[in-house]
Length: 467
Ligand SMILES: *Cc1c(COP(=O)(O)O)cnc(C)c1O
Image 1 (cartoon, rainbow, N blue to C red):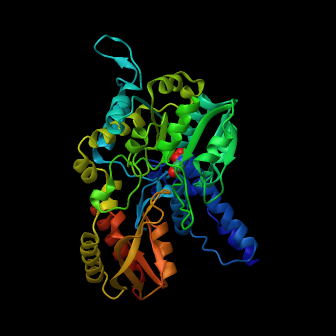
Image 2: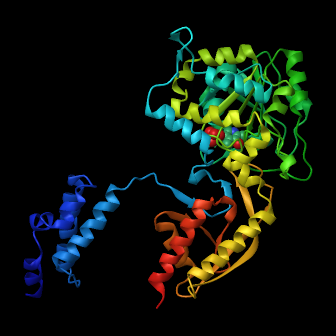
Image 3: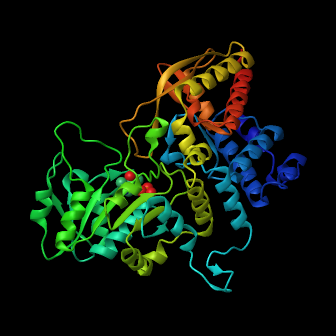
């Protein structure tokens, strides 16, 4: 009886659609999504009534539910998040934020037509490689260069071009997995190169490579074990020694450098990480790296090397499948241009700026942020600061504990887990960490605009929860 009367009271779809608030929503959200949301809300209410749950069947309640449902469906899937984790190159959060100059360059070429493959001087077809090739050469000392979709593509293409159907010799200590789906043995297999493993996990000697060389050898491969280190009783062969060995046997040498460090970051207080120029100077025929790790640009794979090898790569059938689009090229070119002045690069490229920010600087920002939160959200959180470590992330500098100072929040009206969840699912999404029952926010990965948004979100949550 109760059930039947509730079911009868359920508003009709058409009645809800005629409401002013629902009608107004169709200005912003496609009508089809609004209609779907209204239907779904009524269906859900009907099912809930049938299973005996208490349901508010008023038109206001159902319209409200339909509005939020339609808005959720209509929002973009790929959205901005605020990264308060202190992990600078956070692969799941999109790796490197771009420099403002790079963002402008992307918008500029995206809006209209561009010189992507057009030579304005001669009015003829040009090459999309020209936009970054001379810059990469200048910054790495390489004879020639090109860029593709990501480093995985760069490695795959270089292996296919140099070692398909031949043997590629690699140290057992370098058969790494990076970020889940990039595994050196799998990429080698897919490229058609026959992997010949030498040495052991912790030690590989030059004589191991030498003993493995045959008439079938097409390549000596060195992989930078970006995201892990074997420490203790270890040995690997220097790139220059591999190059000398290769030269004696007429075999090219390739290095997957990984992180894309273009300038020696020790000058700015970071630990040593080999640069692409060092690999080029050591004589490697091909060096590959990512564009969006420590380089701080867009997702891309950079291939620097000898002129004859790069010429072969440009003509390889995979080059078309792996080529960069105009927006990425614009971002990459602009980012690389910033490197022409290394101090400017460190100042303007967010990844470098965040990595090189000093603990003193971060501590001052953490105190300011904590004070502001305490002042604005009276009593909602105990806000202090705590020493912690930031991480380079992106499988780079895995051993580097980058000292930092975080804002530490102990919420007084909800658990730390609840606060972390609300920050994460709110808009904009704020990704924080929990340590010892406190929510930690690392200013290292926050911009000034992010800080303002964090304060606002915390103020909102404080208002909602002061009981
Ligand atoms: C990160 C990394 C890769 C994969 O690069 P993507 O740009 O993610 O495709 C390959 N090799 C090494 C050594 C790396 O560090």
